[in-house]
Image (cartoon, rainbow, N blue to C red; front, side, top):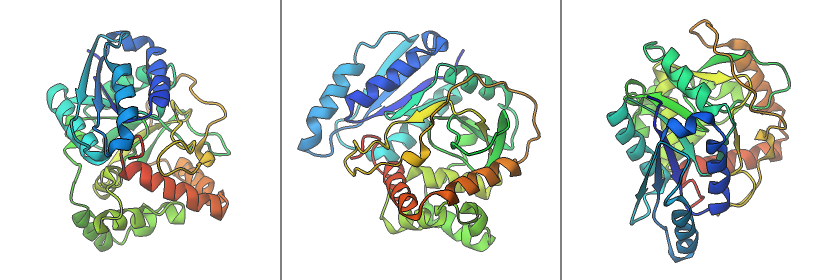
Length: 303
């Protein structure tokens, strides 16, 4: 049986339509169970969008089964993701996770399910990721990086058990480890600041806690050389606005060949990510970082 798909939606029907179209373009969708987690409106202004999304996802076809979970209150993305992923991994042992602004390519489900099977019993591997940065050099067909990620991903029950909800504990461990610079991709991305902001209540990011927990355990995530998803949530349509075009792929989605590779972080790919992030103009980088902190700390629709 294929892994269940957890889709987390909020108030953007146009984005949700594109994600669903992308999923249905995957041959495996017809054999996959889809669980749609629809968060409740944060305020009266969000009611119309939330209602439109719920009309859209009720009665969906093209999947083995569709279950829609409608929240009567606004949980926010962190609680919604943690609750949904915990439920699905507990029941099925694995899950593929998408949000309402992460559009999958036609080979996304094939790659995810094949990788889940291949690395199910490899303790060092905590998750599978669908997105890969648009770097300016060739990447390996697949490769590992230390930590975890959040734009189209999958894990097993054993992997999700590593998730630590207490950001303060993670920050203490990170400080004691002396690995903050490595965690921040040698200055390429301010993950430590993001974790500090979560602890201080300036964001509610589940993703930084997922990444930090995996990183501190020395665990690895598999990435594709050709991105299998495109994030359309950086188009300025969310509540907080702002574009982050530096992460957009001009070409993406070719099939991924799963070969046997060393179970260790790929330094070539890591350095390519570091250089790509450092090459962004400072003003663009700041806008991207601010936008992504909001995206991973708030509801998928930008609540």
